[in-house]
Image 1 (cartoon, rainbow, N blue to C red):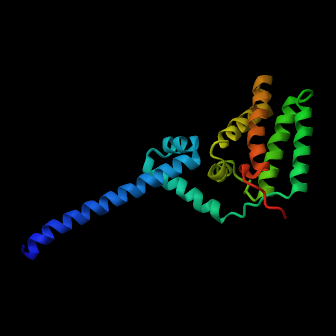
Image 2: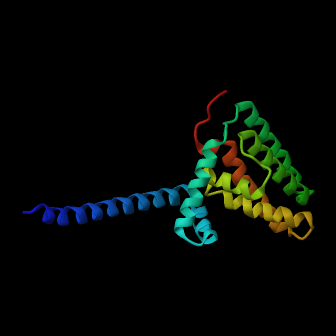
Image 3: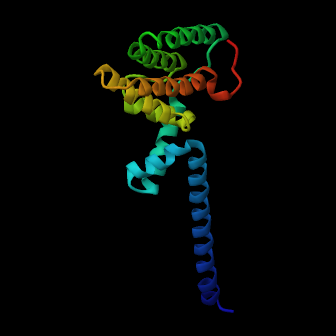
Length: 184
């Protein structure tokens, strides 16, 4: 067999193998992102307009998140926050709008304590989505009701729902997403 014939066979095979390897890498990456971000993956695809753009966005979120100094809570700080939550929850019966607003502030405080930036809502949601992709939608829903409650347009049932939503993220942040806590 001549060199030209061998090259005519080998080059296409190498190209096909490289294309399959690249496709496999992208497929595995997409699957990992879907598993990590949960429902947030679909939301990002919709917002970005394509899976490729969403994958890029979510990978950027991971890089940004990796640069943050996310810290576990000490047992004393965790106990303090748990007590603060009980107080906020106890206020709901008499002052539901105030309780929802205080819950929003408490979640933001807990995020800050853990090392998440809390200045910009959109960025908070992106940063949270990396480790809390399954509960970040709770935060969105609760925050929306909090905004309506500040204008006195939220119903008592919506306020109750907001407390439940805040609690879902609060518990996850308090417990470090279910991972064992490092004791400081």
